[in-house]
Image 1: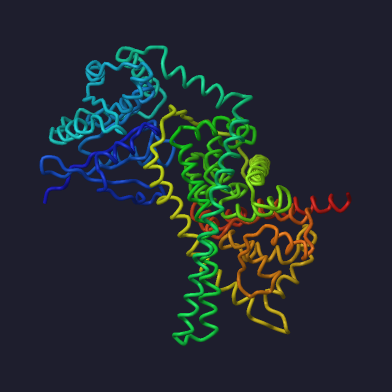
Image 2 (image 1 turned 180 degrees about the vertical axis):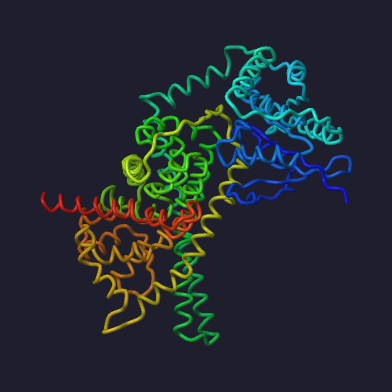
Length: 613
């Protein structure tokens, strides 16, 4: 039985490699981890002339002289698996930098095809490439294309098929992974680019430079980051209020239907209440509160990715992370943490240094995820931005939430510096940070990627953990000993510690029971205050303020609760992800202890100062 020819797809990050892969394979693809690695890869197939070819999308790499897990995978596949052809995708707008990898693959395999992608952008920027000369100088086939516009894909597939059918001449030479070889490739890339590429100095490139002066400027870069952050939060807050309320009403109406059906079926009282008022009610709350903000936040975040803005965030913060002996790429993992801390921890794989990767993992929970937004927004609005959910209070809430995120960033810097001077000593490493050109976002793909790959993925994990948590909370609230429920015994036991921190035992217990999912912290607080035995949903901020003040809340209580919501142990999903990524429960425990200890100290100080004043 003849095996299908294998074609490897290689290239630098941000050159449109995934778009090329998607256009060639369509929906005939699947994703999985490499053996022994945590890096995901994609494999797909395409058919030409009745024959099927396997296309393997390798992780983005700048060189075969590997410095990271992703680069090791790309190098090992190309050098050891001996693919029948290697398509090297490069960016026509910065060809010189991309040719370094092409020259290495040419020397190593002799089976390379250069795919010059983004030619439409190059034309808009006044960049002209002589493809015939480029092919002669590289001694390999060259295909010009614009994958997003579906230009040149057939020609590329045809070139790959011809390469697969061409007998190997064994012309490849061993790659010498030393400084001399690296310098030689760089010089050759410069010479080839100088001869094959010409550029008009005007046009869009100059426009990009003007934008970068603002976006990465020393005075304007940080300010624009803050304004963008505030704008995203405002859109998330205002856009998620109504759908959250709609989902809540829908799910709780369905709860009544389920309860009636359980009664009609003769289900025992304890069983139906445990299943419906316990498990189902918690799941309904998590979905109705968590889904709308994520469905808004993740697409907005993905738009910034597609625009090419996020690498510029890392550029702006790199100097500060270097001062903390950490890595500037940590800025990107922090941004991921705003959506989900588990995703942020997984994203730390992009950091090559094990020491700096650990720092990023241990401090990611200082970024409040979407699960903490409902509690933060409710308390900010009720006690500091106005007691009604109006447009003005939404804007004020977005501003205060953005300031709170800035506090989380400052804590990240401080703890990163402390870790780098104690248990994780070391100097900051250097890394290549690519500032991709600004591109028009592909809205259709953004919606699919953000909803399927992020929103539903994170929601699914939260629901899987929230279900048993709902049963546990119901049992604690409805199991009595000595005239009090187990939940009341627990809150009474925690009350002295909670008072020391400016809160009370109910609030502290809510954070503990909210370990599976931060979305249920506020409902647990209300359940304890109202003694309902089940989670309570109240959308009226005026009514919420009355309940809180009746139970002794002041602005100090609200502030300490907000600060502890910002800094406390990460959720169970994040903890499991930390254990998986670090391979150690010791580091996972430290990742739990550090933010919890910071939150305890800060809340105690704020409460003590407030009492003195």
